[in-house]
Image (cartoon, rainbow, N blue to C red; front, side):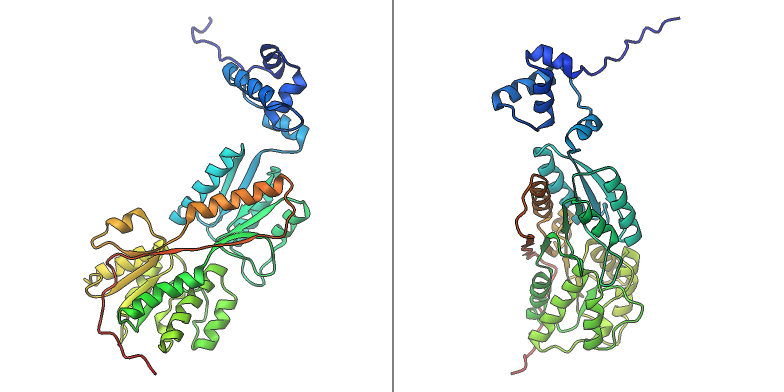
Length: 369
């Protein structure tokens, strides 16, 4: 019994494309593969004929011939995080324009998962890597060193890695945090809760030990906490360790930590949150206790998102150039793939404070002379 369904048609071969285009197979292969010497008019003609015939490239065969897979491996800390979603958009758009595909893996901020992800991507022979690393000072960096030994171009994004100098694209975390906290200080706040300091088993008891905690923290976490401390120091405000959380990075943990700070004998009058989940957890804690921002407690956070602008009232936020981070990282790694051997690039992109209505002005304190 024969089926009435039409048989699927297979992709035309390079020989069929060559015949239709009136050129040799080698010319078609070079035109489709993006290598070798082919004039632009001929390349455009071959690509048009291939598209008309529905030709689909055999990526494996092309990589065996050219040593190029036209893929980039991307390792992100949390694919669900709005910041990394924005970075991925910038990566994808730039890579697509250059003819590259992405293989994306998420690590949940776990170094072991990052190491496995990098190993998998190297096994798949990606042409380059873009990594938001979870590594901190003293961690095993063998997976990054293997990539370097294999001459696989690598760009770090969002955070630097102690002991591993590589191309990087980050934002000015410390200055952005300092500006944000200074904004709240200028509005009269002196007790400002910091939601998501570096995770540590033993909370710091004083400023000196807090500096030690920062030295061993994830780079971006340490930079944002340093900016917070810079703002306090500049304003002559004494550091209070009880106003800095050291919990695991989940929305629920943030809510519990904020509730604890609100129960202090001298609770914060403002909160500075360093990521989206920290902001949401803080909002949940305020709601649970029947508090409203900015009337009862002011709030300013990192990672401006569309919902922040439509909150009632809208939230004052630090906007990171997410897509620009991704686009710049993709451009750097593709440039390295194409042979750029210039000095290591360390791009630091500026964040932007978006002033809205979640910081309440209090009676401004008299600053020390």
